[in-house]
Amino acid sequence: MAAMPALAAIPGLVHGFGQRAPGASPETRAETIARVAAGLDGDGRLLLMQQVHGATVALAPWEDAPEADAAVATERGMLLGIQTADCLPVLLVDPERESVAAAHAGWRGTASGVSARAVQALTASGSRPQDLVAVLGPCIGPCCYEVGDELRAAFGPKGAAFFRLGPNGKPHLDMRAANERQLQGAGLPTEAIHHLPDCTHCRPDLYHSYRRDGTGSGRMISFVGYRY
Image 1 (cartoon, rainbow, N blue to C red):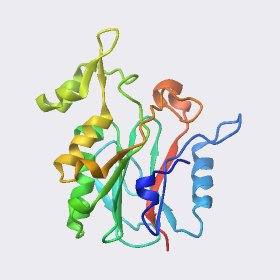
Image 2 (image 1 turned 120 degrees about the vertical axis):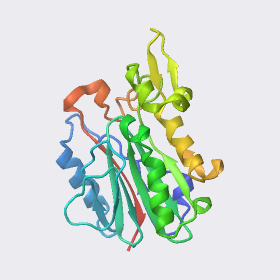
Image 3 (image 1 turned 30 degrees about the vertical axis):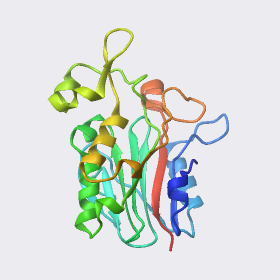
């Protein structure tokens, strides 16, 4: 589990970016959830969503996992979890109000503005964008994320900056840059946006990757919230 100094310095905050479990035998997704939830026992309740690659934002707490790709928590003990295996986990913290948000940003969610929606949901709860701290976790990088030309249309003319040509002339998408731009557009200062810039596809020793491993790929869980 990886932590970021920018968040580790915030009193009372619990956060982490998931990695593969040690050992030769891969975990099932259910085993990963159980392991992470057990590790957080005493800090709060791990809340997961039914992620559908959209931009809907849920408000914690809940009993039945909602279909959503971002969430906001304004109470202590609500630990928002994001499951990824190439998509980008985005964690947002308001240290002034002790509120948090988390977003699951695949290409569809990114094109739909899921990170900006998470900021908007936090501001609707009383936060100010200039008070927020954001960390963008490991995801498949533009080095490895070859995509089709149809994705260019999904991002529109302003999204051209997030694509570059790979060695074979095919477009590669930079989801990290696209979400950073969203956060800046939503009002976060550039210096408040931090990165754990590993490429999940490049690091089989640390991360699951759907693009690399296929449908049998496991999932990492990233989480954020204030402990009880």
